[in-house]
Length: 362
Ligand SMILES: *Cc1c(COP(=O)(O)O)cnc(C)c1O
Image (cartoon, rainbow, N blue to C red; front, side):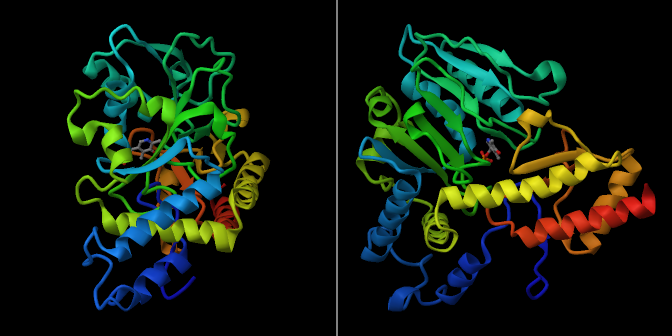
């Protein structure tokens, strides 16, 4: 632990890489000899131009995106995307497929309904409280897109493989697992991610969108709700969330230069999640809530024998410098969010603590 910093297992906003926070701190008052903070420079200045262009270039290199993909920064969180997607991509007569794997998918479907666009829920895991990712889904080949949530932050499940949609572009909410593993990008028409889980502070949503999807955006939408506006203006039609984008730039730099890319990141993430799940599988005291083949590498959800023990566990862990282990208020239990920036030392400390807690209370 560094100067009273805890191991932060919060689900979002969440832990950020320490070298990134240190760089922000070091340059906060005088960014690159400008005499100003990065929060004070104009978004039309060469300083900010470099920031946003570098953030985009690094994102493209990390994910292996060619020129048909555009990287955009949109405000309104991941939640505004739930509405923008059907608004932009579904004309009269079009329909989209949705898979419901939990709270966030449910919200995406709700917004499509509000917008009044034709859509179909082709699979759901609600029958078992979203503890698994549905298999063998029959997607409609005439759907404009197939919407999934790649990682279910609250329920602790994740798509281990992306589904075969027979060529229908996948649109994935990757808020809680973007940049955590390498991707076969050709399957995706669009990816979006609220930054505050894996890539930066709250206030911005990263949108990666393919040309053919961009071409579907109609002209009769309000400018700020049209993806074309963001693509045409390099995400600077209006004042963008400059500071959040700057932090994303530094996180991408950390991923490229310190971690060594997404394959290396994935290896570390698998190791971290493996430590926790393998340990839990040896005890009857901690029970992982997701089906084995659907377990998330990012959000490890688990229960103890009763709620009283869970309360004690969370409190004791906090005392020991491990915060944010309470499950989402809608599901209870415990959740360890072990995003990219959670060091393996944090996971080891947690497993050690869990062993001790079980010895005393099991
Ligand atoms: C947190 C989260 C959201 C909501 O993000 P906001 O930025 O708060 O709108 C949506 N989807 C997933 C998968 C999330 O984890």
